[in-house]
Structures are given as C-alpha cells and as structure tokens.
Length: 120
Image (cartoon, rainbow, N blue to C red; front, side):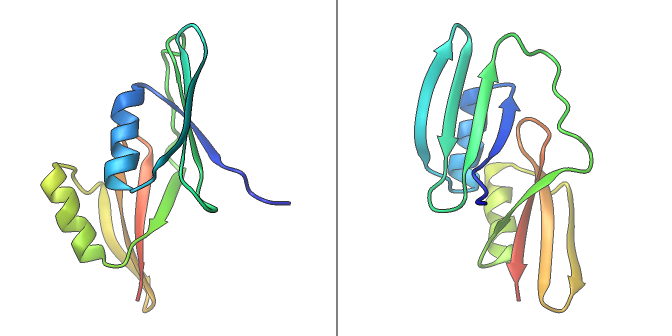
C-alpha cells in the first residue's frame, strides 16, 4: 500500500493555493473544474501530495483541533523569519520534544494547523 494524498476542503481556492505554493513551496500539479462551483487542485511532486477542493455549496468547515499536516524545513529560524515577512503569525511553539527535533505550528487560510519541523 502507498499513501496517495491528503484532501482538504477549502473556503477559498486562490487564498489556499497562494499559501501552499508560496509558504510551503508545493507546486500545482493539476487543477480542474469538476462541475458548477466545484474545483480541485493537486499540489506537490514526489511523495508529498495535497488535494484542495473548493465547493461553493459547502458552507461549514471543521478542520478538527487534533489534526495537523507537517513539512520538514532546513532551518526553523529561517522559516519563522520568512513567515513574519509574509505576515503569518505563529500559532504555537516552537517546541523541542527531544534533542533531535524542533517545530512550530501556523494556521493555513482554512484554520488547519500546519507544522514546520527541523531535524537537528
């Protein structure tokens, strides 16, 4: 079995694409309409894939308080400075649960916790 992707229903496709392209660095792999008011975009290459679905008929969003997605970065300090330039605040952290890992969370435009992790 192989993991395919994570799917997120988003409030605003353009805002979400901007976040995942400019902040996380995921390129758009495919983007298409599936019907009136419904659009899908696949981002990422290699083993990291994210599917964004925008559906005008979905009005209630609940990302869940215990769910997050994580991305590895080379430098947590550089990522924090980059996010500050973009006007994106830190949701929580940084944390260092062991000598080899430190991380922090931000919220994406839909309220999903996105974790940036540095291996030390």
